[in-house]
Image 1 (cartoon, helix red, strand yellow):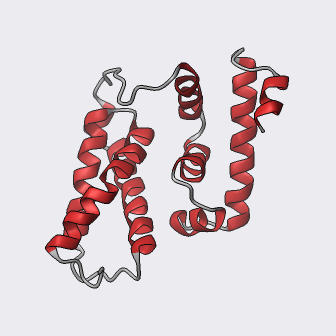
Image 2 (tube, one colour):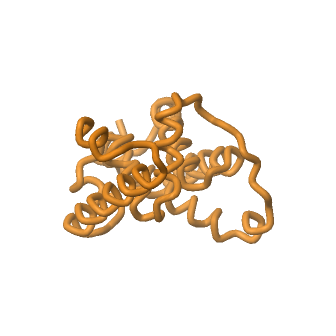
Length: 170
């Protein structure tokens, strides 16, 4: 199916992965327009990689995530991005608890935020995240733990949860 991509394969990939790519881009950029641009750029990169051979769907998914993260870094570095004012808007309607949690996740340093997102929202294992991000599994594991601890601390300090509530959830 993926050696190389046919037009039908490409359309299936767009249909299957565009929402995930948008969520990753939005989670990194906090801007709908920039996230939509990144989605388009990722799929353009896929079109341009005609000779690229993907072993399976997971290999393709990992490649798409890596390209998405790199495109987000490009946007963050760009002159235009540095000189615009973001418009605050809600992409997805969250419950109050989900909104608080997502807001607190967005406040985490980018390294922790990406790992937590891939682990909890996309369901990747530590080994897979290490491969996607090109880092050691132990590094990913410790950053995931530190990210959880920071998130827990921020939620408690913000008065959203107390120690007892958090222990009941874990």
